[in-house]
Length: 471
Image (tube, rainbow, N blue to C red; front, side, top):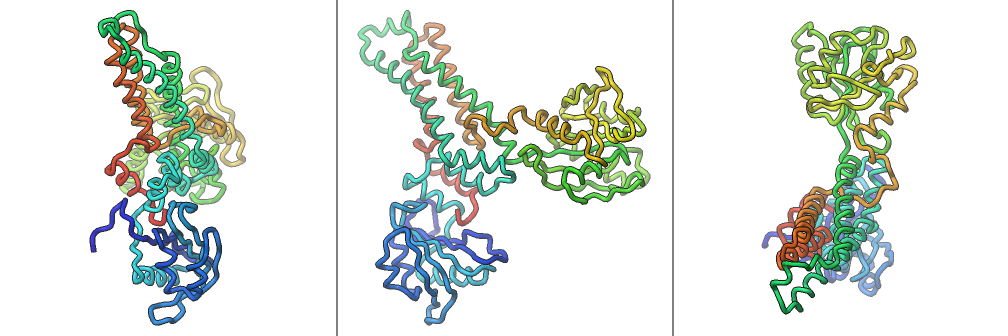
């Protein structure tokens, strides 16, 4: 048997659920004539073969000897009215994984092959059911960690990003068409390098502004999809574990009055303002008393170096000590002001005064800190706002304009910006339009690659191979 590959027309099948304990599992089948290929193992064979699309049929799947395997519901789809654009079945069987595995084995006997990663979505793209921005949104939707990331992915799946790309491309085509017409009908090529400006310049400049807005959205959108690593650091007994537990709304870290209880870092996912955050509670920083504590402190420092943001807790009952200042200096953070993240090195830091239920933080331009009580919850809301602002000024804005979340999209938007900027620069210096036109064309092509109007097999294989099986 030849190796499977994206783009062949073989009938495919895959488990679309995770096979864990549950009421139902779902098996997805797609390919030309797939209901008829499946029919020999189904108890209501003639009913299935005569059925149109978008119908449900109840029955039994039988093994090669006619013995029942499982009682199922078939959702029947006929081309082109299906997810993939092909004939397709969704088989709802009993959950737990065992029934699904038996059915998949039977499907292989009938001539279905195992679907590749993302192959159903790949076929949806190839049959014009989805563009590439929607395809990528499918995977974003599946991997969303918060309601905000889910909402943003759903917006892209609904076509918001595709519509924005299409409108920008139309602006670029206006400028490109005018430029190429002028080139085609000019009788004096020499005149093109002189007084003539870039036709459709206003449209080109409008396109550039919208492309730059898309490029700027990337950090915000990736933050919402992938999340951020936030490390809680400070001296022993500063309240790090208490803050960790409060933000999680559960007791994960051991909290005692004994300094140095946390010997290694622990982590958990939490949503802060809709941003998925991998929150880490670290060992307290002090002169280690044994080798185990020394290793815990070293691991904590390594984690801080990789973090998107560090919350440094000052024990309000003792105040800011020289060891606190030494640690902040070691991070390259020499000052803190107004609860804003300060990073004169490579580690963004928010300095937090804990235990305001016992002592208020000092005031002054160099000593102003975010005051909280990890015990009572006072000031936590203000801390969360500061965290959101430090990570991304727009990350929590649910009404933000369409944005890009995939690295592939960002690279192509950057390419479109670079080509368009160079074309406008040619016009500014009175350069020849026959050099500006290819740059405008490249900008249009870059946008075409984002939506998939311009694509290659290598690009598609690389993209869809990152999907999960069953999508």
